[in-house]
Structure formats: C-alpha cells, structure tokens
Image (tube, rainbow, N blue to C red; front, side, top):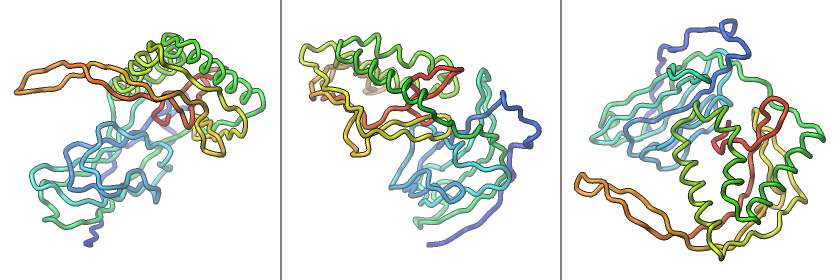
Length: 282
C-alpha cells in the first residue's frame, strides 16, 4: 500500500480568542463524489468511518474528534475510475445559513490507478467545544421521566405525542443539520404508520440496569445487558416512496416490516430542561 503525506492550508483562520462561548460551532465531515472504495477516515487517530464505502449520503458530526491547534486527517481509499472524491470538514453555526470549510481534501477520478493509498492531511482548527455535560441525580431522574413519558405515548399509540418529544431539538438544532431532517421525517412517518396499526403493541419499558454516558452535550441512555429499552412486535406497514424512472418521478406504495426497539436514546439539556436530542450525535 502506497503512503502519501501532504499538508493543506487550513481554511479556518480564526483562533481561540476569536470565538465566544455563545458562538459555538458544529463541525461535519461531508463527502462528494465517490471512491472505490473509501476504506477508512481517521481524525486525530480516531476512526470516523471504516468499511468498503462508495459514498456517504449524510454529513457526519465530528466536533468531538477535533482538537485546538494541529489536527490530522487520514484517508485510506482507492479512486473511482470515472468520478473524483472530495472530503470536507465544514463549520456550521446556529442561525447562519453559510458554512465555512475548515479543511478540504480532493482526489481526481482514477488518481490512484487502482491502488489503495493512505493520504495524511494536516490542518489547524479551534473548535472551542463546551466541556462534557455533568450529570447529577436530578438530571437522571428527569431523563427517566422522559423515557417513561415516551413509552406512555407509544403505549397510547399517539404518533403526535411521540413526534413532539423532538420539537425542542428540531427548533434549536434542526437548522444546523437540514440534511438529517428529511431522514427524521421519514422515521417519524414510519412510526406514525406503525402506531396506526391495530396490531401495534409495545412491551414494558426496562428501566433497570441503565447506563448514562455523556458524549459531549448529549447523554446516551442504554442498558448494560444491551437489551432494548423497550420493544414492539414486528408489524407490516405501507409507505409511499418516490423513484425516478426514465427521468420521471414515480410514486408507489411499498410494504415494509417495522419494529420499534431502541437500544439507546439520546437526550440534551436546553436551558435548564432535558429533552430528546436529534439522533445524529450532537
């Protein structure tokens, strides 16, 4: 395997003093084009992506991997013969439609000539991430109350109540990640389809043996035995999907199997209150 090292100019010029605590940034890794294959993306020694990927459809939240000052991005890939590859880490802020690239890596179609290579990109960043959230007993009780209320909405088969658990997170953070909102909409539509079925039934909520793990500003709740926090029977639902056939959009209804069985749930504190977090890592 050929190893190529290079340094690119960091596109983020501001230093730590230029950023205020209330002006925190969110950083995402975006992929444009394709590879054959993209096997690993490593940021400061921590794996962000791995596998035999051709492309990724949604940006990946990476603020947690960044550090103040020097950073290293490693990309292990084989070029696609017909299409180039561009990886960008970009900065986003609340209430600002513009994004700012922190570092960009590009590779032309066929550049590696069928060989797998590893490229190392050095850049500078100042993420100014807030410290990880701390949890007290009152916080855990508030989160447990949310889990019980969420389970109650599922028991009642009330899709509107289920969707409203994410209202605050969508209001606060939805604009930062518009790419994920369509995915969340589809997930909630599947939930609504499942809850409307007379066959839907959710089992009891399992609140024993829980672990609370702080990941930045998000708290992840799961069970130590890795069982779902709650689970329903699998049922068949029908949804409308749009495909493109001969250049025309065609809508059709398809049937799929749905089972609600969250292995973990994510929570975030907005102001003084806990709410469900968006399921995208921030």
